[in-house]
Image (cartoon, rainbow, N blue to C red; front, side):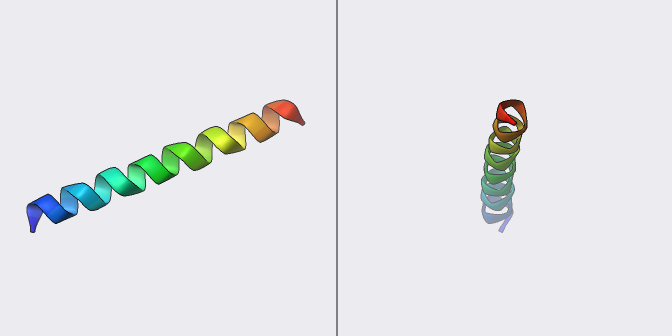
Length: 30
């Protein structure tokens, strides 16, 4: 259970950082 929770948190953190970097790149380009 704890392993699955940690895996989910890591997955969400990766998605969040990826979306944030894409958003920053779009802002910098515009």
